Length: 557
Image (cartoon, rainbow, N blue to C red; front, side, top):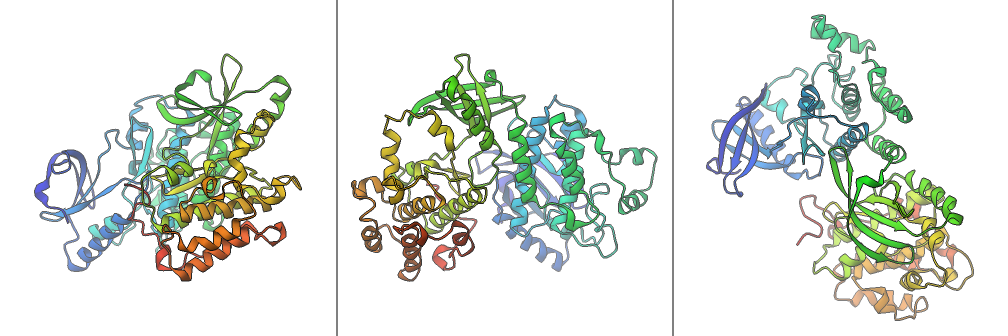
């Protein structure tokens, strides 16, 4: 625990059955603002033991859409320290009507909420009280983070009653033997989603009739739901109403998972987001390959002003239809290990601008070979696993990447997450065939049958490229320098020599598995290479060297 003298409490900003929330100052940490929750109950020995256990669990949770837990201290009772939100809660924003917010911005909020909830569920944590009061806004209302999750509040109140709020609670929780599950959170998410788009309190009409909370609860058990038509959705996104109705379905098994909601919202955001060129502010440009320029930029949509990567494409009228068709295909892709394409725009010179999510950490190639960072093994194995998962998603959709290199793999979330950049046929359509710049770069990752012109790119050739990438990640050796124009004939000799490489920090027992996988992927015959889906289902992060403690940063110096 921290020392209570390191914190100064200011004004009281909230309260509940579990205690009081104060605005505070953390003196020893550059005098930063914090939110301090002092638990007023839970003084018996069992409750305190449970609270301390939950505090340890909170310290393990790290996510961009989860309010950061800084620690705790003891004064009269236990006090919890969280990051402070200058923007307040989403509930306050909606009720006070602080500003006009577009449907796209609301979708961004709900996508962030789903991302945070999916993370909690992946950590076996059920929120239990998801509502707009427990969604805080940061960064000038652009960033949404979830707070008040888990069971600390339940332990602190020494209360066996339902801790959720009437109107947001799933009907199965309202029964005497009801238990909280992930699907209960999905129900609450559906009600919250409705509230954001309807800009009304759920079941406010019943509350105005002075109906007793238990009577409202009974209505919910018997199927009462908010009026779905109160949601002010743009006409092209009516599917959202259908997905919300699934979220609050009476049968928990018929509700979607948070992961499914993320996929749905990712597709919806990209398919129905018109991008005005005037909203794109280019800050820096550089030449990339043969297709045009790569730029860093800001994309302004209402109060959102997010960083994005922009690819400016050289095209002509003969190729225009094919390019737009490929852009549409890319916009329909939604996976956590595929770089997101938000949409496209056109500048006054009639050049196409493709707007991608911003890769703060840059490409894997630059990180492996230019950054002066020692990469822990669990991080390397996670990168290869993320690459596999992204490829599996593409191959399930019968999409072949065709240019899989570490230059087309980008790092996000403080380098913990890897995503595949898929430019697809847009790249080929816009290329000048006489320019071999990109071909030279890709040469070292190409399967022999493609390199020798025996066939075009296939799923099997993607597997070969993955094998080279896996070798490159684990050895931190650049294939361009190592192969010295001898690829692919010497690849197996290089793999055999890898074990003596000074950067290979894994044990012989696990290295045997790793080397075997690389060799299979780099088989000269395509039919001898494994399927990506089989690699995914039999991935072998099973030893202590491959473990990934969540509290350890992957690649932060």
